[in-house]
Image (cartoon, rainbow, N blue to C red; front, side):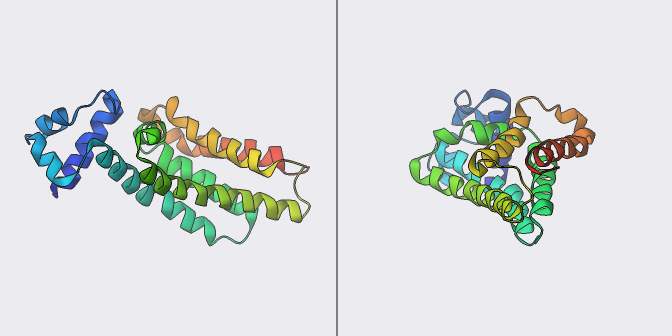
Amino acid sequence: MDKREDIYNKALELFIAQGYDATPLSQIASDLGLTKAAIYYYFNSKEELLFYIHDRNMKRDLIPIIEGAEKIKDPEERISYLVNNYIEKSMVRDASARVLIHEVGKLSKSHQKTIIKYWKQMFQIIRNSISELEQAGKTRKINKTFATFALIGMCSWTFYWFDHDRKDSAKELSETYKNIFLNGIIKD
């Protein structure tokens, strides 16, 4: 396996268990049987390692969901797809979302811009989907921006309380979120 992958896996494991701030690079190196200098060979800083974890997870988890949603013509189905896949393939995969969402503020401004760009793509798809439903006369009068943030927030908050040992409940959870959201915005 590539050393970058070993470092990625160990750093993510330790960041999940201890938090980013409480995990020194020396511990990551020690746990891998490497020197701290070896870590610096692959990553210029701890922040760059955190960015690598963010970027890799976004490309693995969020971008394929966004790309799949963009192919769906019906806005209600698009929202359903996003919720189901975001919960089932990202939020409950493991506890990495806790590190990624919570620690984004530790990234440099340029790295934050890259990560925020991914989130803005998801935001726009949801907001545009709500706009399409509104234009079709299917929604209640609602602030589309607030509704979009509410949906992303509801789904993203899952990592604080979800029991990753009970992944079998992920489908029920995503269906619950989808129903709460769509029943809240769609007219009777």
